[in-house]
Amino acid sequence: MKIRESKGDRVFEVIVYIILCLLLLIITYPLLYVVSCSFSDPTAVGGGKVWLLPVDPTLAGYKGVFQEKSIMSGYGNTIFYTIFGTIINMVVTIPCGYALSKKEIPGRNIFMAYFMIIMYFGGGLIPTFLVVKSLGLYNTRAILLILGAFSTYNCIICRTFFSSLPKELEEAAEIDGCSTYRCFFQIILPISQALLGVMILYFAIGHWNSYFNAMIYVNKDEYKPLQLILRRLLVEAQTNAAMMESGGASDEFAAEQYQLAQLLKYAVIVVSSLPVMVLYPFLQKYFVKGVMIGSVKG
Image 1 (spheres, rainbow, N blue to C red):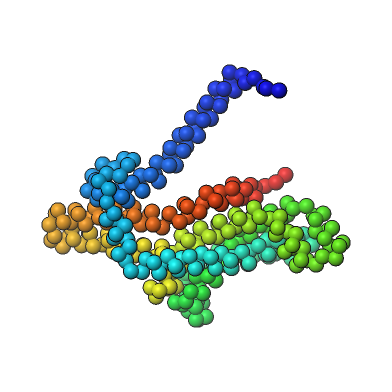
Image 2 (cartoon, rainbow, N blue to C red; image 1 turned 90 degrees about the horizontal axis):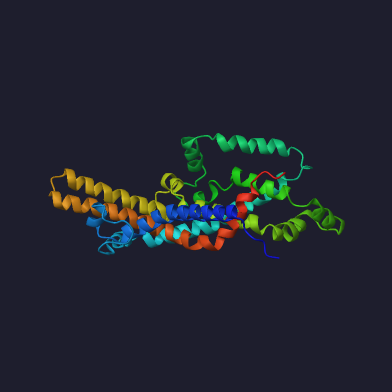
């Protein structure tokens, strides 16, 4: 039976579509602008002539990025840290959230309170550095995988999700002689694909964008992730442009170096963000489910 829409419903639908189109424009335009600037002539970018499409297309910015010899090694390191760091995060966080979701676990509120305290209060950068140094983890790949392996916020999401699962599933498995470990791996995890997808997405993006820990605890170029190498490249370009401007170079040459540094900035954004943007549409459905996982359920 076809339901006839009222005039008010049609007006409301039109308003919703207009708002959605405006939101799409607001979100999409900055992305298109950055990509267009990365392919445009430095003079056009510096002169504010780029609005939507590239002006006098050039690959000068990308040439400047990939001339750095350590770019490919940085990509490899970032992929390594993202894959194995995410695996470690999952192994630590998922079982912890599952255990804390059980009301029969003695002292679970004490553990949760402790996790909440260390979520807001830490020992500080210098004490952490001294501990890392004393353990022999300085200038190693392991420190970028181990440090921050546990996330209290993600653990809370896991605990909330596991608490919402029907208890009858585990009770039936227990009656059939299923052990706790077998129940977790063969019953709970298979029906928690949404949670696993969200956790993988959160942890992977965190590792991909991370650079601060590498800047503090890693001093070897062969261990540095992509973000740190791109940051160094961008800082060097801006520093060189400033030195050219204040070092007596011609105004035209100094302006050219400054504009090239600006172009390099856009190219760096594209190079560092493109892999995540390509993978995100395939994980978007898990991200949407993850918004509801951590919500309060009545």
